Length: 271
Image (cartoon, rainbow, N blue to C red; front, side, top):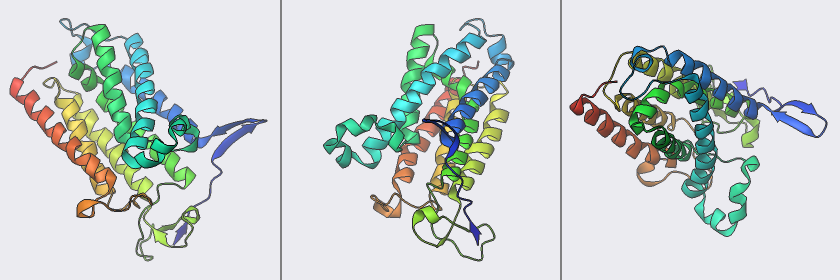
């Protein structure tokens, strides 16, 4: 069995200031988003759009700012509401204690929806046209976040057969049980694989909303499968039908993604 390397979560300490690896993965995610956004500007639908207004590098920087706010606020509020509402009802001020950990992807996604809707309204652009632009730029950020989870030794997987070549012991779990390194599974699936699929699909002109629909279907499906290898939250365990909270949140996500995609194909309004 492999043993988690027990990497110090603090990458650099400068007196009282500590720079954590997890924070650096967030910076990497934002950097990758900007780089991919600039490449996305070269895709013909956005490079030559006249009716809805062409995109610029300033647009990418602006939407990154909106997106960061949406991710942080939505992710934190989503975690409090979806995963531990009873605790935060009693301790409402701790909702603001983001340094204690606890972020929800699905909450962050809802936060980004609100942020992009506000951006779209300000720029007088269709909301789904905006989400279609940014969707292929998101998975690499998700991949960076999973690397941060692995470095911290958190969100470990369920028990695995010790003979599995990559089965790993996470001392942070308080046991010496061999587990699936589910953070790596999610890095490969929701990160790299989803990025390749999204980037290839989005390179050609698609009906408005189609790219966003594929992202929701893709992430929801891959996260749903990954949850079978990830240890459920201790205070929640398995819910109805033996599914985790993450899986239950993915079900409507996939359903809405299918609806958006089919609706986009039906309307056949390309960008």
